[in-house]
Amino acid sequence: MPWDRNQMAARAADELEDGMYVNLGIGIPTLVANYTGDKDITLQSENGMLGMGPFPFEGEEDPDLINAGKQTITELDRTSYFDSATSFGMIRGGKIAAAILGAMEVAENGDLANWMIPGKLIKGMGGAMDLVAGVKRVIVVMDHTNKAGESKLLRECTLPLTGKGVVNRIITNLGVLDVVEGGLKIVELADGVTEEELRAATEATIVD
Amino acid sequence: MKKVYASAEDALEGVLHDGMLIAAGGFGLCGIPEMLIDALVKSGVKDLTVASNNCGVDGFGLGKLLETRQIRKMMSSYVGENAEFMRQYLSGELELEFNPQGTLAERMRAAGAGIPGFYTKTGVGTVIAEGKEHKDFDGETYILERGIFADLSIVKAWKADDTGNLVFRKTARNFNPPAAMCGKICVAEVEEIVPRGSLDPDMIHVPGIYVHRIIQGQHEKRIEQRTTRKKETA
Image (cartoon, rainbow over all chains, first blue to last red; front, side, top):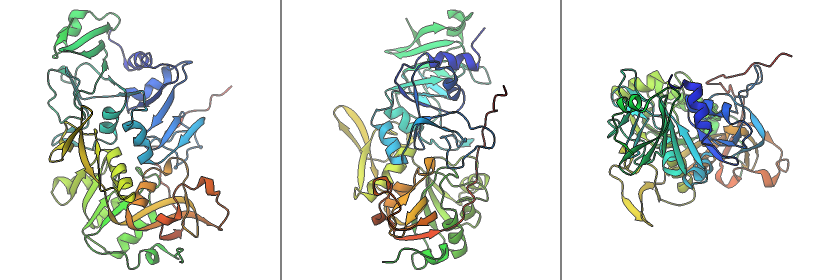
């Protein structure tokens, strides 16, 4: 059985270490916060907050307190607030240990595309280009294939790039792969997924 | 110099002209200068270029200035779920310059600090880098980004004193400080103007030197994505 969304999020949470400052993207990456256990992780929200707490209780929403997905959230006893220039200063400056984000396509050289489909989806890159260029480690969490069953791990991206050669590790429903010299290297297979299955679902070069 | 004005209309008196560049604070609908946007709609000023992370939503925030076709060009990082924005952009009525979010913030901050350009890694190897100067530093490639020197800044803060010192609340700070810094004139709308001496000088987020005009008023503060959790019942 391939991993489901929560299992992918739980696997991504294993990447995080005690004391890390981390930025989580929208979608499955957001779920990672549910699986950090006892680890002391500080979540950054790029609209200007370190120490992001859970969603508020009903009736306690504060319009002045949202995350980068514009969702209402809460603060913690460690929280700090700052402006957008300071926020991206810490991102660009390499102070954030890891970014976990979703993707439309990842290429075997670490190129990432997740912000635009020409003619179809024109929403903008938000903070994604800054994050992938600035944080120490970029971890992509996404389904291995798209709705048409085609590999999202490609030899070359077909969509406009978010960053060039920026991805370090990819966690999909089929397993975990690292971007290495010459292609992708299988690090781990999801429970019950065989290497042959993963290879068959992957367009990118897999190296041993 | 008197900085406090009676209304948003008064505070914009004499500073508007067609074709001007306006920097606006806010992230999504959080910390946006609602009253000043309404006053811009009323003024009829047109052919605006607006530097703002987002462009409001249909019918609220900067979305109002789209409906009245007063905006010619947006400089933004994310235009999200805004049907009218998409319609005007796809039909060629509206120009759009995508900026990575951190680049947009730094372009404002830099201009406010007298820096006309800076190099950044953000966007290298993407469409954002096309046509921009590339330069290597210590083996890494960077691109040149320019400061945004705005004709007018419109921002929203929580509290101000009458000298223009500003204090923000939680994540409503966002783009407001860099936007405030980069305009020739900065107009701030606040929830409360407090007596001089009642703000802790160590806790001022934007010093009054950046702020030229202030108004106080009521804000709707609309929530874009209301997310909650249930209280666990014992």
